[in-house]
Image 1: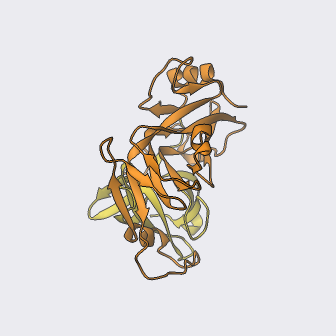
Image 2 (image 1 turned 90 degrees about the horizontal axis):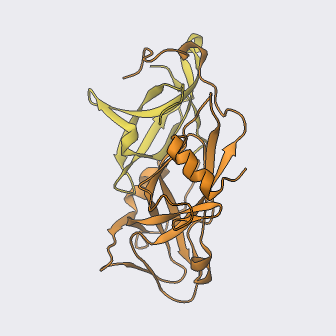
Image 3 (image 1 turned 135 degrees about the horizontal axis):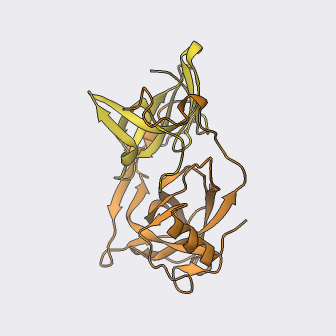
Amino acid sequence: MEKSPHIDHWVTVTTSSGMFSSEYAIALKLASGQVVSFFADKALIKEQKGKSFLKVTLVNQNPAQHKELVLLPTETFETASRWAEVVTE
Amino acid sequence: MILSNVEIVRCLKAGLFSISPMAGDDPTTSPFNTSAVDLRLGEEILVPDEKSAPVQLDLRKPGIAQFWAKHSKSLKITNHQPFSLTPNKLVLARTCETVSFPLNTTEICYSARVEGRSSLARCGILVHFTAPTIHAGFSGSITLEIINLGSHDFLLTPEMFVCQLIIEEVKGCPVTAPNQFRGQSSPAGVL
């Protein structure tokens, strides 16, 4: 099924209980410092070393500024957009 | 271009997108219409909390998702215990089916629109009233905003055909793969 050349990419998020049992409420810090929130299926979350990571689509990277543009699974409430610029980890 | 029932089945079999579990795979019978496929209601219903103190939502402030998670109640419906949606009430629900419309750079991408059904509309039931687009790249079950604009209570039962999915081709690639990752299978940074 998976034919996309886009490679799974993961960004650090904070999770809490979602509305539906199969989802989390997500808090994501953007490169600008703004914290945005949205819902994402639990299948898109990985836990590792006490941190939560959300699966996103990597659109572009700017190594010089340590930033990357990613496409979120759903739009955020605060920016009404799926595009998000985050700090490269 | 909207896909016909026959083309939807062909694309499903070719793995170009997925709808699972399907209620059937014969394009000449339910769940197919000539240019759409019907989806079923899942068993979880979310009822917004109406007992909390009045709140003015400000989307400029963080934590909206966390607010809604805290101020809603999840109910599981069964055939013996359906949910009675009273007039002018809003609930959220999800489809039984999980859909996936992958982002492809080498093949055509697909997106979809979720629409109501005429039989439910006659009863005054809207199963979505905004944001019908299932974007290319989306994967998951579809969230429905169900409201009763009719004058009678309406029973929501699990696996009822609640909405229809209209699938379309997306012209052009929505997102190109980052150059530095082309041809790689495990770039640095991937867990």
